[in-house]
Length: 185
Image (cartoon, rainbow, N blue to C red; front, side, top):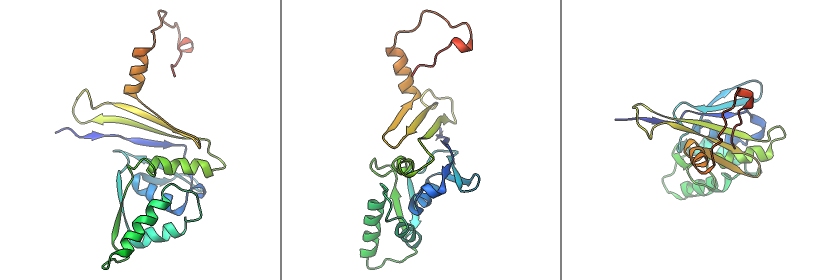
């Protein structure tokens, strides 16, 4: 059986002060989170970000309460999840609540965009991923890059890049040196 992985890195390191407590909690579970200097964290994952994270209701509520005044895509969704948890007769603070981060309106990419929007030091966040496989399969290799700004989330995979090459006339001249080579956009 083949195992597929998507090692992922996020650059630059993120200022903790620009994240809400809720974003910090959730992003720290979706990715590996390492301190990287005073007040910054480095987010990465050796196998790819988690699609679903599970958090005990008590710590989730505390992080939500500490983040409610900030503009964040995840806030409304967490409010709904906590309300649903509280409505259960047998709910306990130690119960885990699952958060699906594949939703387009409040996934980890939207949380990172909210971080950029609030930040006084970040203009963009770049998420770079490699696609790898434990067996040599044609569909098991490649990569992607995502550029997140306050206004947009842009994404291209190596397949997207190859399609652009197919649809763009190839140059008939070969560059003589590395300085003469152009990177196509």
